[in-house]
Length: 179
Picture 1 (cartoon, rainbow, N blue to C red):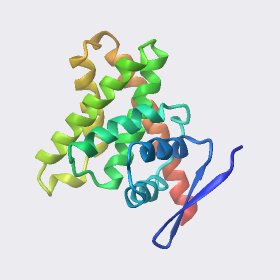
Picture 2: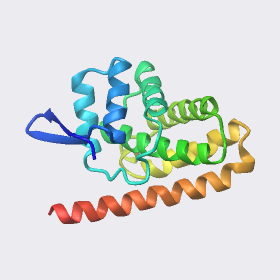
Picture 3: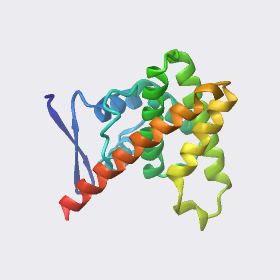
């Protein structure tokens, strides 16, 4: 088990295992120029979610996809970035398990990020609070079709949905235990 790091953000302390996915993702985001305030907001939101099932995800790919949105000034809230990061990590694991090259996975992740950003911009404020996880998974499905990966789309989406549901169940158990 790795060392636990604590990140200060306001009055909250954020814990990330040194060798865990979140710590590796934070390190990749920092390399890409994210400042401490941006990282703190992301990590604060990330602690509310269970990262079970994506520990072996590719933090570099996820950071690149998030960075694409940041470079193109997509105004994601921290929680939206966290949901996107989790779903991209799960998508990458599933695509890798099916034998896709890292380059194709990264291109797909950046395409998903672009589409999610455009969809969030187009939503009204009233719409903007619900169904973001579904929106992200819909954009993953769309991007898989765009990239010519239709033959594996159903299998990837089924496995991705199961992985996300398991993460949500773990997060709900975690939140129930905290109250």
